[in-house]
Amino acid sequence: MGVLENKARARLFYKYLSKVYDQVNPFIWNEQMRSEALSLLDLEAETTVLDVGCGTGFATEGLLEHVDEVHALDQSEHQLEQAYEKFGKRGPPVHFHRGDAERLPFGTDTFDVVWSSGSIEYWPNPILALREFRRVLKPGGQVLVVGPNYPDNVLAGKLADSIMLFYDEYEADRMFKEAGFEDVKHLFQGPSYDPDVAITTIGRAPE
Ligand SMILES: C[S@@+](CC[C@H](N)C(=O)[O-])C[C@H]1O[C@@H](n2cnc3c(N)ncnc32)[C@H](O)[C@@H]1O
Image 1: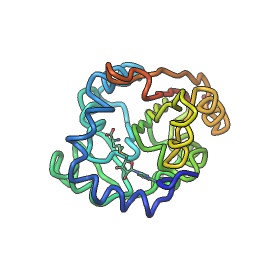
Image 2: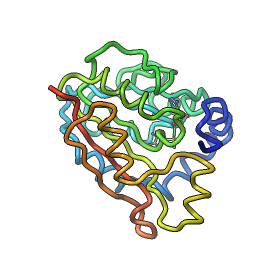
Image 3: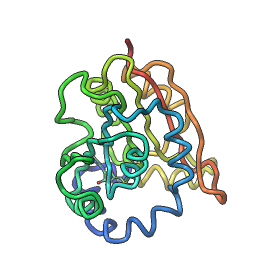
Image 4: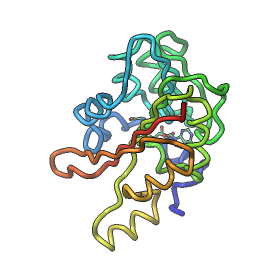
């Protein structure tokens, strides 16, 4: 397990990274990638959406181009503080929640869509979190998760494993199916200099 797949360490990491997150983020996760990922979802103004690991609200902002309101959750108070500055602390349009991806504070069958970008790599038990996503999704609801693609190079792979979760499409398939999702599909995405840096997985909760 990577050094950052630990909730307390990830919180400490983001205490410092939150100060520069919006400046650093576009080098690996940019607006074009976000739009491409958003286009995979069925979004209408009234669609109920949860953004897990919302951070400073980069994806939340993209979601709000399609839907009226978003529920956004993160475990880092420092990341959330940055997001509050953009959207206000209390919604609408954004309803913030401080919490853990592996223990979502929402009832069963609540959302049409659960989105999570750039967060799964920090979760100690991703299948537990994905099962939570399935629980809070309405039957037939869509899940979309953006995570880091496993590096081709063996040495880079070993280094990646020591830091956080990196996975390929086979591992993504296994995790999403084990969590109970159907119609699981993957898309590789990235900025022009590294077009496969991210793996985006979509799936559906059973009807
Ligand atoms: C790379 S940022 C992604 C932010 C945003 N989703 C985006 O698209 O830019 C990862 C976020 O996941 C959050 N995170 C990590 N582990 C978490 C957990 N167990 N529960 C909730 N949020 C978590 C971090 O605090 C951080 O804000």
